[in-house]
Image (cartoon, rainbow, N blue to C red):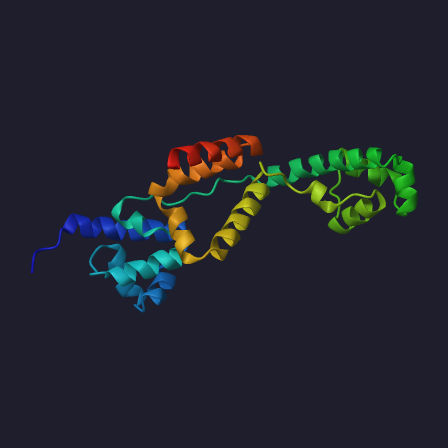
Length: 220
């Protein structure tokens, strides 16, 4: 049997370790996936274990990484770091501003809101200034009284939560597609067709009709 490239063995083990650490998994967890002892699993990451393709596939599934990562064609995905404390403080201020705008659109004074909901007017002022966090159930009450909806206060598409919600929605939509369509969408060579479809979707009806007529003239 031909001798195995020792450098490639070490590199593959290093890639497996980095993928595991990137996903925050412990060696014992990956060992269970491969039905190995923890001691034996350490030889996987040191490049001393003759790992098979199905075992690599199992790790890719468990760690949610692309198989191409193991041969250098795809990187590990990175999630933008979020400063949660700053995010929460900023969101309190944004919600306060939005609450004030909703109240003004409803033509209500702070005093009227406080009286209707049996709240201290000073608390309403603190809410609107972002000085005091608005409990979610209070926010629901305020929305009902001011004829608004909690969706108005949700993080927009440009914020961390907005991006998270968009990714969740895309994932759900993708998994509803049949396998043939999924394969079509993930094939890089089909990107030009998707770009064309996007451009067509942005055209007005008259422009699309003209394109269809031109195509008919070429065909016939």
